[in-house]
Length: 264
View 1: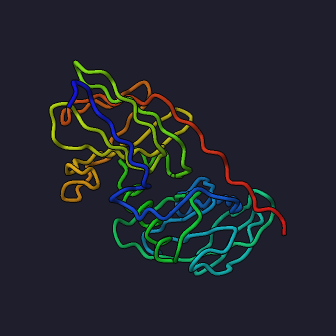
View 2: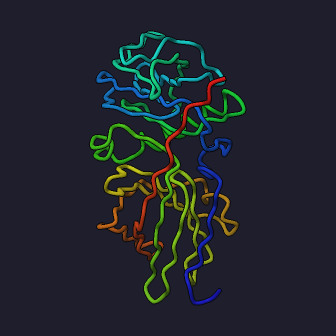
View 3: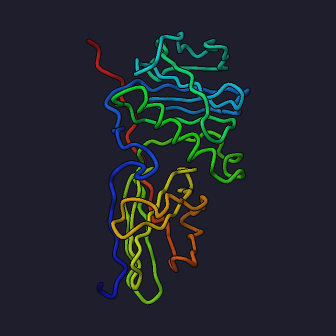
């Protein structure tokens, strides 16, 4: 190995944590929702999910999806469906039909809301797995103070640029989409380290980062163990003792919003 930190970009979405079948949106209408009962101030995306510890997850979209059924209309008012009353549901392009489905929790339970702009799934099971990964493995495992500060969580495919610094060596930049797994090697170490970034607040480029030690192939965490989520901003880099690196948030590029499908 050369006298440098070596980095590897891994482009599979949510590697070793979520099935990699979701892709960027290609025209699904944008849906917006807010609901005080579940602690959701406002969130928008191709898919929106409201979380309630007693009832599970209500997944909504302004277009059909595997496992979804027609539940009502997004007209800026309340939506009543499957025993839920969502305070406000609206579509970005004006009134639209709403499809939805309800899923139970398999892991952590909690209140809040999540949204995402991925839209293509091969089957209902793929979509449900992605939703549970986002809600249970990411959102509900974020530090409680971050969830209280940013109760509406969204994954839009924004591009994150990080700089990994190691004392005595040249810095290495890692660039990838939020929710994707980046990997890097540290000089003098045989292990690969995986880094999973998600955006908490785009205005301040505030990120939550999760780290895992991987086997030599870099294709999965050793023993499947990801560490707790840690927070970094451009003004407050993340300092780690193991591996001995400094992770700096350099830039955050907003993803293009989903566009409505053309009329047919």
